[in-house]
Amino acid sequence: MIAFTVNGQERAVDAPPLTPLSTVLRERLHLTGTKVACEEGFCGACTVLVDDEPATSCLVPLAHVEGRSVRTVESLADGDGLSPLQAAMQANDAVQCGMCFPGVLMSLTALLARVPAPGEDAVRDALVGNICRCTGYEQIVEAALAAGEEPR
Amino acid sequence: MNANVVFAESTEDAVERLAAAGADGAPLAGATWIMRAPLRGDRHPPLYVSLDRIPGLREVAIDGATIRIGAGATHAQIAAALAGEPRLRGLHDAAARSANPAVRAHATVGGAVATAAFPASDLVPALLALDATVTVATTAGTREVALEDLRAAPGSLVTGVTATVPRRSAHARLTLRKAGDYPVAIASVAEGDDGLRVAIGSVEATPRRWRTVETGDPVAAARAHAGELTPRDGIEAPGWYRVHVLPTLLARALEAMA
Image 1: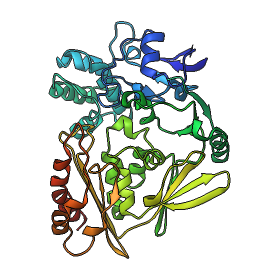
Image 2: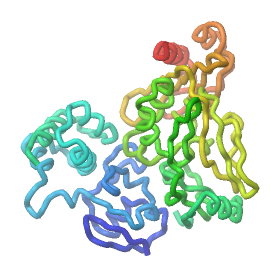
Image 3: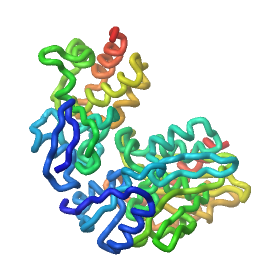
């Protein structure tokens, strides 16, 4: 059994140590908000936070999260209350097909935790590893800038 | 996916476990290459010795004229540590622009130099241009090996990389899009006391120094001696294209260094 924290809860999973964290989250813990697309660390759909840092969970072996803290997109909203970032996405019509979106939110959540009011360059840099096939980056960037301006 | 993973407590512990496992074991660092083994059709060995919990393996230190990087330092850590060191701009840019932020936060320099099968590494040509030395530990002790001569062998562990800080350096890479792509070609240059050093990556199966173009007019030499190269075809570009863009990339690197 490999024990770690997911969204504030202690979890333990019995799976081979090289099982991708993304597989553990989706298929063992049923946290299907984390999406899997390329499975090679290229697209960013599976981005979660490991000890508050963005990680492509398809490339993180289960063994390497033992004792660590993992946050997924499911942790952002508090019941029906969206996080300021999520609310800004909704207000800016940024949500499109939704495949890239959980990863986008986690990359930006980490950025906003580190830089509360980032500029456009910082937002675009943070999203380099999140590929949106709808190419709808403009509203996402606008929303992230708006979220950065909200009092937190 | 059924390989076992054990955690080494120290480099000595890791080396002992790797020596005991022989060809059945391999080190596991940032995992970004090893986790994709199934996609490449590569088989995992029965045992990985994870370096994830070894303290002190991640230090990046510039001590006078020498830079030392612990094997566990990630691309992100190297980029952060070198941000204020213009002489090492080549290595900085290689670390800061490789792959994407999440991969840079995990992929290590030890993994980059030990993964001979990866043609498109950014750190390796940047370190070749610095004429870097690799520290390799075995149960018999540690030895220093020129990066050019490094051959990862069972039972051995890369523990660090050392280089003399150059006068100046630069790193040019061509990606067809920007985000996350493997570069089609890389030219990394540095000027040391011994003159200009040029290394290329992503063109052939393995990054290498290209000494032919280090004297005279490097760009003209790169055009004249393209036939020396054995380019690789790949999903991003055919081999001829990688060679075709190389003189221009080399010119960009030299211009960035000037």
